[in-house]
Image (cartoon, rainbow, N blue to C red; front, side):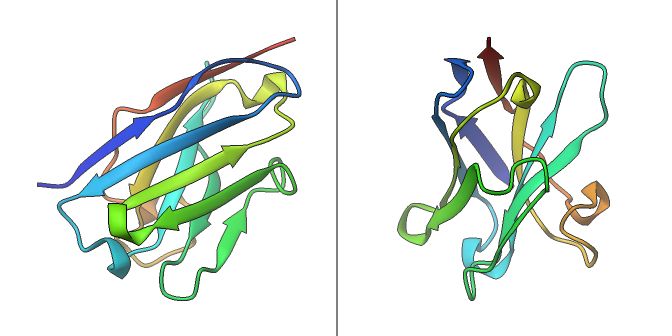
Length: 124
């Protein structure tokens, strides 16, 4: 059974930092790129970032490029999202997911499993 447990969300002031974690089980962690998505109130799910475990290639949405950083700890089957210089528009529920289907990392149809998410709220 695939399980994804996101944590680390919370309330942060604009300009502040948070580090999200996602522990992955039920799949061979090193075999799949792992992505972070978010869903803001009233909006569609949006791809934030993705990392390829094999070569460590990282991809970012334009809206977070230069502010967010994705990384993995293969020994812990965990992927992280370091969020710096946060903005109010970063407020959302953040999800991680293994990219189990062929397709662009930014397309939600490339992911077959989703966790419960962790809420991030950025205040002004």
